Length: 553
Image (cartoon, rainbow, N blue to C red):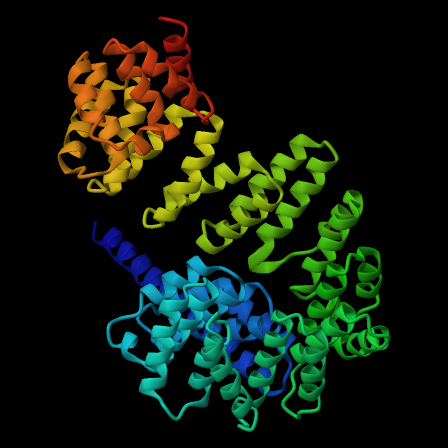
């Protein structure tokens, strides 16, 4: 026994020592890879730096510094990966104001207002007292056309930092879009004055050019854009704007200017992406693809350029070419989109099984990351893939209980399918997470009444809602129908006639008013409301109720 004890103890020591050694090696490897990445960055060797960062993240996805550097590289390349990596940074360091503002800014650039709102919603009370917070929040409100809220935020930013010309620029940009001509004129004057400020000169010119475009003053916009290009602070986006204006004014210089931009973009991934996206947007996928194939491999194979190449094949409906092109690629953290494109190519060719296999792999490749799932949702929506959209919506609903926005599109889809029991299941699950939500309670009560799912206690729900309903027409109608189901037609009539004549003519209520009128002995008046209901989109159970009522049953 003593020998056995010594043996076990010895093995334990070896195991612990081995584990400690492995942990030490793991830590050393992380530090070594990060040191190499910084060295490559100092030498401006982005490709090798990114390779080191990806290796570091493969062994430790929680490496905060690596994630932050990936955000910088992705932004530099104008890659969609920037949204993914900035989301990871916020996940790892959620209390940082800077992280949340960066995510909000990147999300706005990607057109994802929901992500931006979530990022800003997590800013703490102290952070919300800063000028930079108000500036970013105002920019989001402006993008979402919430002009009054945007002006409040940007005015507060100016108040907190009155000497900051960028705050003045943001407020003037907002007021420039006002219908109040005097306010817009004052904003225009502010922008003209800011054109002399070296910090915001370029942005001021850009806003004035956009103002001219909004007023269809193309030649004026072209003149401002040309003036901007003569400025030493002009950026590549300014040259792209000038190209846009040359095309809009059918200027003969368009071809030669495009050629100069193409030459400038040959060795720059971000610029190549912008030029090829512009070319594809002019409706010339063949020419765009031909130009992309002339690029060096290091440019052509780095995201997001391969995504434009994929779009070219789709625009040409060259599904075999698309499959061949994507077969040997990997899109790193966005590989789910590559797999999704392959799924579409197979589906377009009628290869249903292969399309399904690629779709399953695409969903798996999101690793349940919310931003990637939302990207799948957007893309499948653009392709009108209803079944796949519903699958993604359910995945988000199940994996992210705080993403309450998903209930509405999922409910709309189930309603359009006439899936009453699916709706009931959705509302029942949602209520388990939010038992005080009156709208969910009403939806659950109404669908349970239609499907006669008494285990959901629809009568109790309807009665509770009615006690709190006030003037809510939907809640009153649900309770009235609940009374009718319980064979209390007289009471049901008293309840529903609390509504105004206009509310009773609402197609979603007219059916139930007609049923109650007929049960109360007023079939002639009921007929009018049945006619209104017949023109509405009804659930199958509602349609059966209507058909039976109109045929005398």
